[in-house]
Image (cartoon, rainbow, N blue to C red; front, side, top):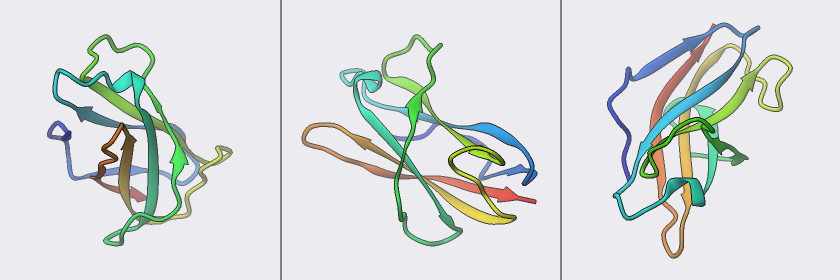
Length: 108
């Protein structure tokens, strides 16, 4: 599995509440919607830590190309202080469980 190309660092204001979207591309034989997806946001440059359940974008049709989404920001279950974060995605498949670095998020 891999990520489509995107800017290496997204930016959001600390009072925002938005869905963080990470595009994921899998081989055509894999239906991503049937896989469990999680995200980890940690200090930039560090390995993933605690995992938070994410979901697949509900309005996409392609089974092997989907956006993993997680509500982040003020008033969400994943509040972020100003700083720079590494964004990680973990997909649970049987027997694989890839952990993929999705880039960075700057919170101002």
